[in-house]
Length: 398
Image 1 (cartoon, helix red, strand yellow):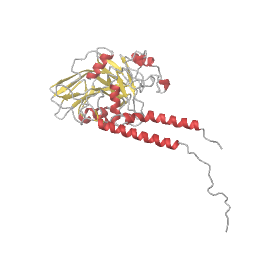
Image 2 (cartoon, rainbow, N blue to C red):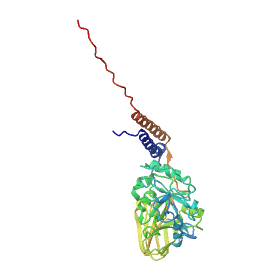
Image 3 (cartoon, one colour):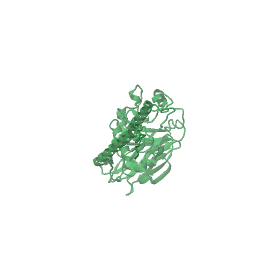
Image 4 (cartoon, rainbow, N blue to C red):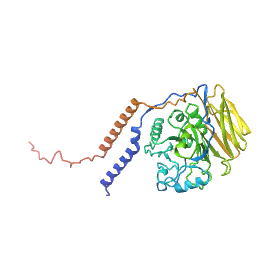
């Protein structure tokens, strides 16, 4: 009869235990957060991110993957080839956003960015202006508190945090976007997919976040993922400091291509002026359809076949963003926002200390109980030979 190898069995249980610790330990450490109450933009003044006359426009992509991690992440071309191709297409700011890897710090002439996240729910973030990689993540499920903890950690090592592909596989629900804080940008366009409804969910609860558009390409030969989404940024140069400053101020707009590959300049933004609550948007190039969108994504006004259109804030309008549909592109402008004339409030989520330590204590006790249970189950039972209670006793009879 074949017997089990006790060494192999012990090694298997040790490996399984180590894997469980690596995967589950973050859940015992992640804090519990209290989130600010929902609110809306308010005030008698209007913040216009395009208030200054535009200068030089830089074309940028922050989400593209090269070959990394021995091909596990499915990038087909090298990081250098990705940069070369985007420069050929007229981009002054090519970004290579390999997972957990900043290509710009490894000899690649790219904008410093990486995609953070190695979880099954695709809760990913783009670290724009990244200085270092943060390796912490929750690999399985993620609560809103888990997501907030990751955003806060990534933010410590980068200039800006963008939530990537918010519509993919339910990565960020409407409720989560309305509670989370600390993110600066949201990926309105991800390749051929548009998620401006997710953007409106955030804006409608007074999250002053700006929109970005990216390819998220893994293969430069894929026409559906190369030069289909990009950003036009009003910055003096393509340097990290200039691009970050412009993005932080909202001096940019996102573009989705619906026509030819060389359609970048068919219709471009000329300016946005706000006077006494009246928003006037002007574009150059082919006439287009202008849609003014407000609270909860409601279309407030549409004007067709023009290069200039206006909309006046109604008393119930908290923000107005403009979408310009040209013959071959769609432009998503950052919103004009109501505020008090001083600053746009942005209260952060805060750690609930009592809830956090209660979670950590209960997690520690549960882990200890599991270890003790497993140890008892694996403890060998010593068996002794059976001893007869009565021997063959010769009894004396009367």
